[in-house]
Length: 221
Picture 1 (spheres, rainbow, N blue to C red):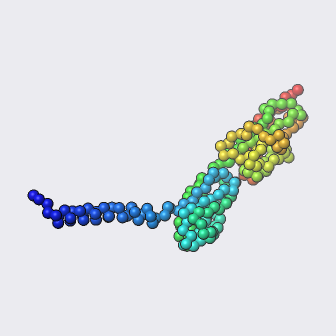
Picture 2: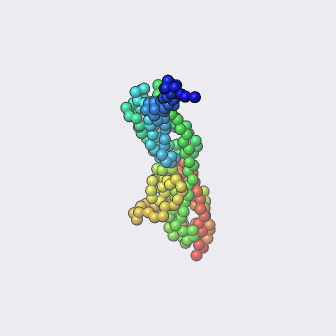
């Protein structure tokens, strides 16, 4: 059977219609639909000020509000992407962050704030009366005062934890291998009353309450 010229034309027209139906949605989606709005936080270390990013915001729809850790802030910057600096909680847990615009939630994200897990290391594990013990540690709250207890009794020896030095925050709990020569340290001189004993030395964060202990022996001679 021979195919007529009009039938070929009809088949060709039908093929064009099918192709347009398939390609049209993909073309319009690629050109007209923006990337989804989102929230991100880099390196969520407890107690630190961290940057909260809200991206792909359509600012033509008005200002947005960021809801994080019980705090609500409004932003009106005409940018597609902005940064808000917030202090992360010192208490570990799973926190919800979200952004609203015109009363409608446009983005949200869950953030896990890890637990402070302090580690301490003395310069000596045994010594004589009059010897100085130098302590260093990690994972105390940045900026908080840490204090030294011996057998549960405060010694009056304190040190402010920071971002570096003998006491600093490091998320993986790695002990710092060396310090600047003039960096202050948490030092304690072994007293006469500890002669011939093994004592428990505890470093406590006065704000976070986290602590860790080691045992040091003082010789009897």
